[in-house]
Image 1 (tube, rainbow, N blue to C red):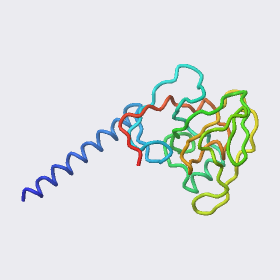
Image 2: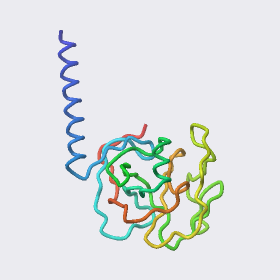
Image 3: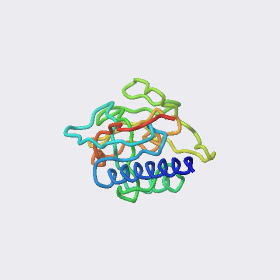
Image 4: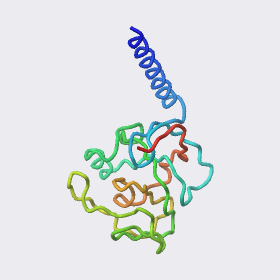
Length: 177
């Protein structure tokens, strides 16, 4: 009997915690990350009151393009509240307007190697991946990266508009599996 009561209390506390986290996400600038590109858990979107810079970790809405919808259909992106019903991404800015990005087996920015930037030829299902051809990041855009090997980032879709940046990403309650 005591074990049932303890299990019921544990379940109730867990359900309440999940509800509070979910409510915080709906009412505030909090989001739950369920993808391995960054640690899993609760994150806060912190307003960005300046232009994005290299090494900024940002929440960004992916552009509403055919390539992003294909990525969603393949399971690379989740559904969410961004345009095109896509979820925001958490990625690091590795290049800003005017910087040259080259894509080979790895990514370089202005001749410097980006850490953990190996470019995959195929996804986890064996489907071919199209890589970004490289070039100078246009004005009003950024090049995004995640050190997670399976990340879908600018290595594949290229630079994205800074207008999609929701703010800086700050860990609140996270864990890396």
